[in-house]
Length: 143
Image (cartoon, rainbow, N blue to C red; front, side, top):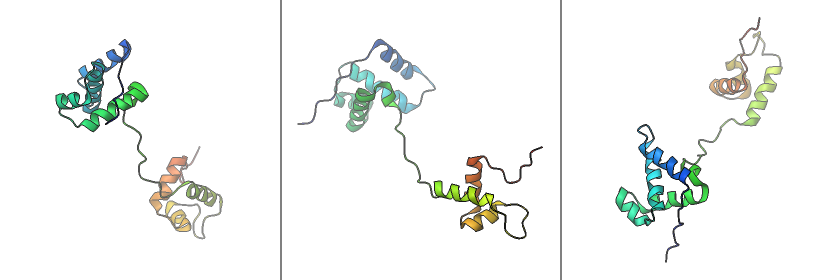
């Protein structure tokens, strides 16, 4: 026997917020869909009824019902995703900043991204991104 779906009871404020989302012409389709699911849940409909009414899968309805029951309206937003892991992390940034404090190689008056990349065995684009993130400009002259 499957577990009982959580019962959804909405406050007037939550109901008004969800109805506003469903009427908004500029709202993302997935936001409107999620709001409609919760409004239908609050009417007392079962997951399978909602899935049939809105032509969506039963797991999708179950997921958004559960998320709303646990987190409220904020649970209807997309969850954060981890993204691509960083290739050059904190150690690379620290090594780069330390290298900038050293004298540049012979033949150079100051460091450039190519020289830093060669010294750190990294790409010049990685050096450029790390410097940009730290707010370091190699050739900016302050007056």
